[in-house]
Length: 91
Image (cartoon, rainbow, N blue to C red; front, side, top):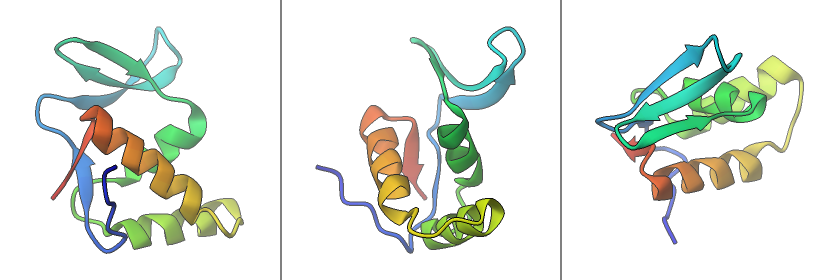
């Protein structure tokens, strides 16, 4: 299992691109082998993973933006999966 560091910065992996796809009406991650359509919560999270913002700040921003607390476990689960899939890398 991939160990995610809350104080590390994560960003879109080389060879991947995140963009709004009008035809899908959703944010997607594009890569040479295909495309991943993101749901709303995943896109809100992964769009904040810009390679220079610590994950702890991403979590705080999400909690502030949506007026929620306790989002850390869900964010860590998503970022872990995104790193394992090769969509995100630690910077």
